[in-house]
Image (cartoon, rainbow, N blue to C red; front, side, top):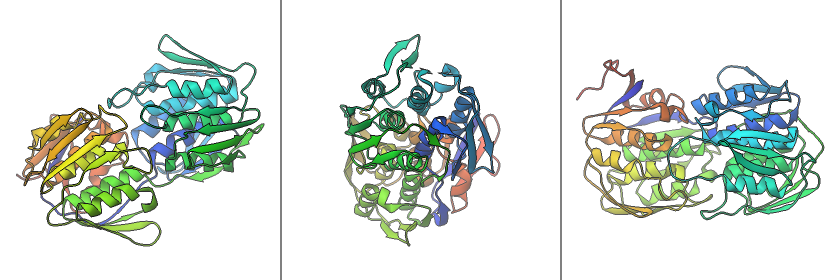
Length: 433
């Protein structure tokens, strides 16, 4: 099993490019189940979650062809399978996004309850609510979501709000199903995330009729069929934010390419308040220059356009070395703090109070052996290692590989002293203490 070793203290400097968004790619790939004919998807990130969904789609009768690492063509060649099995779906929560397309196109679905990162309770009630409003019957049987719509789906008005805001994947499932429903569907309290707008653009290019994508109210007029199309995935705003925070933490000077700052307004605001310079460079790049001393900032995660929950751990790592006290409040997944004890192992002074963590900045973190608990927590520990004194060794990096493509190579290219190695072996070119 791989580990990553990081020698802290290097200043990041240079240019790094953001890949396509994993969280946009997964539902867009699932939407290929709706199409007559092949769909070509470009700017596809080469990450484990994408490979897992390819395997799920294969079990559902989808043939794929890769054109390099960043492009794929998907085409349904068998419309009979309706079961997404436990062995695959348990690996990644995003697999649930095949539920809506299966019900809409094949009239039934049997999808294992999903797994993925341990970041708190994430029920699928709103997924079922959306499909049931469209006329599907759903049950939970033997660990599977079983849905059927023998008489087809019908347009309806649907409210998808939940206790912590709207549901991104629930919105995606409902949107994909509504695209082939009979009549007009109105989704209230729809997720506004850019990944939903990107899915809506893909569906529109397939022939769907969608209004209001990216707003809390979406109107979908169902069509009889959808065709394959070609689409380029938007840049990954979470990966981009991770690189922005890395530059700020390390007193770096980094140009980040293939970034949409309009998707990261809340993150850019926090970095600027912390003392970093965030300067747009044209329409798809920016420069981040970190300060000599970070200023403490309070952070609250919220649905888009607020601070993404997927950047909470990275921002906490940064605030661990700020000059003062910050408060990080998690409004999306109140239990998403499994990175806290690992950061404490590195000398961070953190006090959890319910859905918030009080961060007392320290002059320096110290390298330690730490363990990743989930995808974004693993990124936060990488960032902490970049500024820690001594060597940090991160285990369970398979979490990291779910959403970051060869991050150690890309960070090393801009100055980080970081290496991946096999457990039980010394890292190649191990960082020096």
